Length: 68
Image 1 (cartoon, rainbow, N blue to C red):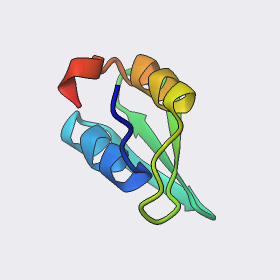
Image 2: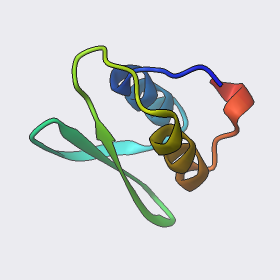
Image 3: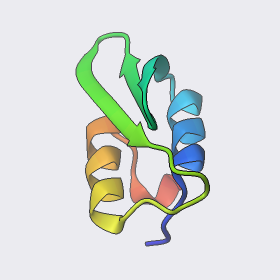
Image 4: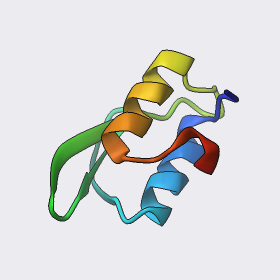
């Protein structure tokens, strides 16, 4: 699995219908209508997300790995 940056992951979430609700420090919090989950994406420049965190966020968002 390739790792992507927090910025790119945030773009992917927005493309899938997730909305940015607020920003606290370097973490952008996304929510989606009809879904009780909140996704907090750390955005630290262009540093890639760690693999475990990315897999967890993909699972919560309902996005398959091959959609990256």
